[in-house]
Image (cartoon, rainbow, N blue to C red; front, side, top):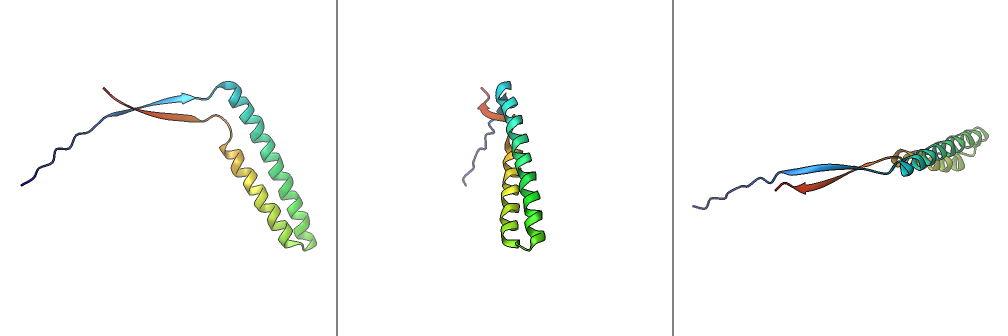
Length: 85
C-alpha cells in the first residue's frame, strides 16, 4: 500500500505600492478617459435621435472601452508571493 505525505508550504504576500507620481498621472488619465466616454455617449445620443443607429452603436462601444480603461488606471497594488523559510 502506498502512502503519500502532504506538506504545506506557507506563503507570504507582500504588497508593493506604485509611486505617488504614477498615481497622480493615473488620476489625470482616468479623468480624461471618463470625459472622453461622456463625449462619445453624447454624440451617440445625437446620432441615435437622427436614426443613425449603427454609428451610434459604434460610439457607445468606444465609450464603454474608455470607461473600462479608466477603471484600470490609477494606483494598483501588486502582490508578490514569497515562500516562508
